Image 1 (tube, rainbow, N blue to C red):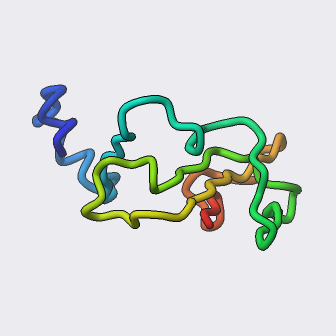
Image 2 (cartoon, rainbow, N blue to C red):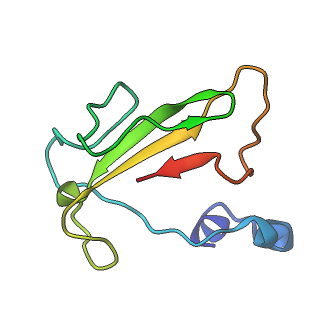
Length: 104
């Protein structure tokens, strides 16, 4: 809702309400993180395997290392969050489908 006000969309707020999901902002500590990144090819921890769906492997989206994040109130102080998104050239997945994003 902050962005609705910031971009002066209050007159259209009734249309946005059903689409809104709770979220938080993530601010990384100053400097360049060596641990958190988006895109690329991560080295998975030994206890994790690359996720797959019925049409093939998921695509890596990003890795967040919680020790890189400066705002700690709602987030863990350590640990990693791997994010993957279903990738399918034939369009069998929709972004709102269950299982479209995998996080672990």
